[in-house]
Length: 470
Image (tube, rainbow, N blue to C red; front, side):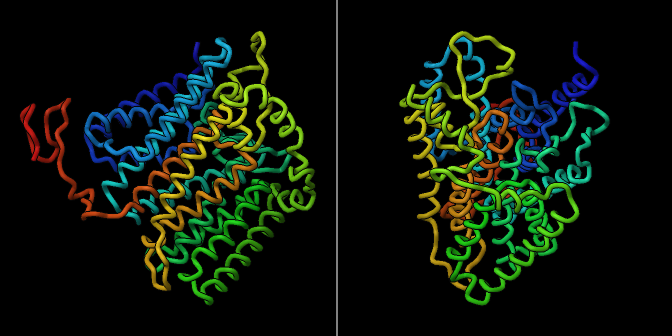
């Protein structure tokens, strides 16, 4: 029997699913894509089989396919190769674990679908300021979520008193803020990337026109990055800031670079003092000072790296199966099944799960993505526009993301929300940096379409079935 909270969850899930499908099919695409983005920090249903957000992504995908909104699929060859490798790798796993691996493939498939939803929307409605603003609002929601966690401390916060709507718990014993994305390291990565985005917006604040939003968001990202205690994300941010200053050196100029360094340093010191002095989540700088390395590996990762490196050669080419940890595996007895802890490194994670072949196809996907933005980069001048600098920002964000993945794996099953965020961000940046061959329609002036299930044009009245829209 379900509990009252679980029935409440199912009713909300059913309602949201039906409403979002109808809105996606019958209305403009903006409400659907904006809703999916803003839902990312809030997993209303987050079970061992998946999340409500994953189901909603698939519903919107089906609706957009039916209405002809989902038409372009960049990097499709690389994506198909990734899923082909997943299937090959699953064939090597024990039959008793097939269901777990299938759920994993479906979850990762939802992230790639979000990539194509985001790409197709922003490709058709090429408003880059609107796109950045959508992700900025998402950032604000994440900061609000973390603020509630910060105030709550070790107290669990459940909306409407329903335990199934409880926010992520904090690592109080380790004095680390968790945030909405499942782990302190993953949230640290989110904040590091958004600090760089905030820096880009500050550099172009006159054109973006929302300085009142950018400054508090940038400071909030700094504060909560420190509160996560993520050493890797902090170091990735430092590298990212140096790369930012180098890649945008012509647009910044000498004066702009000095101003950015001063503002960034003052902001980081101020937020660091505030977090260390006034919160319990104040271990970042202590952890940085205590870190030791053996063979280039942090002391806290030695055992995980050793176990991964010991087991990877057992099936080096195609791996042990797409999913590393199974559902309730500590309760199940599966003959001949063995696993390892998460290695906290994307390369080792891929080598163990999908082998060298999987690592190669993922490397090709990321290389093609990064090379696309590298080719679209322009020689930035002092007065370059935001849109001209967007390919450089996209390349920078991908580089910093991959650096940060040396200490975490965003492809874990339970990190589906972070996967969806990254793929949605990549889809938007890929679309908005695409060379514009002709003037794209705004959403208000977009061409009308037929809807085959209802046989009507929403703004143009009845349309006979089978009539070709000109």
